[in-house]
Length: 360
Image (cartoon, rainbow, N blue to C red):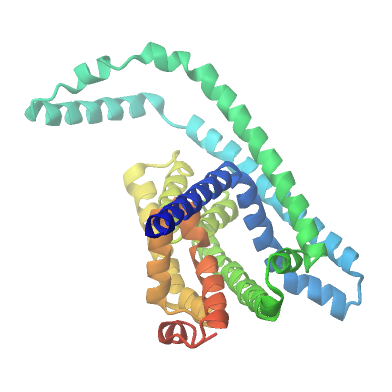
């Protein structure tokens, strides 16, 4: 009898393991679709207050309000894309103004200094470079071009998919509710519905707060770059502010990008007397913007929208980054917020849950 029970337990455990592994493998295979749904969900949450305004204040039909919101999204997407075209053209023109002979001399001097350093460490840098198979690298160029075309195609399909999913999520606001309730026992439907509504409200406030945060950074960056007459200042400011969505890493990338574009925008001037001082001043403005963001904007957003302590947010973002990379860092706070709401609804008597969710 005992052996039969043990055998059944082993079979049940194996079945659970196989089921979990199969589910994870399936989710891995459809990760692109899940990302589309996640982005569409974020867009629908951001548009939620605007759609409510159109429906309740202007008395527009739901479908018309959704269509107006979608048109606004499409306008913003194409507007952002069109903003970067002049920046790319301008940077190309700036690079064409570079004094190539002087640049080559500087590069040769730099290479000589680097090689002398490595020779002092018994490393022949030129020999190492010669050992690289440049022919195979050149032959890989057609493959890189094909990959580039493939990436453009994937991005186009992704944008269309996101817009399509977003439209129906905004139009049928109870669509996700119905999907969740369909797999929920009847006695728990009310709790699930309450949790979903709370999650939607919190995340709507969170994403709107992010837009405010990006707008503040964009304003400070724009003022800084315009003061020093940096070309394409508005586009650079927007891109660097947008990168701030990626916690911790985004501001670092944005800073490097802003300083690089500041220097390439002034290649016709002398480096020591103009380019270097201007870059330092821009760096000071960038640091000032980050201080405003870290000490005022972010604490306000996290305390007012997701009701979480800064230490909680830090740990959650780090864990999300370790598990899922940059995507995990971006989605860590919304996922943690949703999890807290669910825990509060179903484990309200747990002391740890009470402490974590006391602000919700």
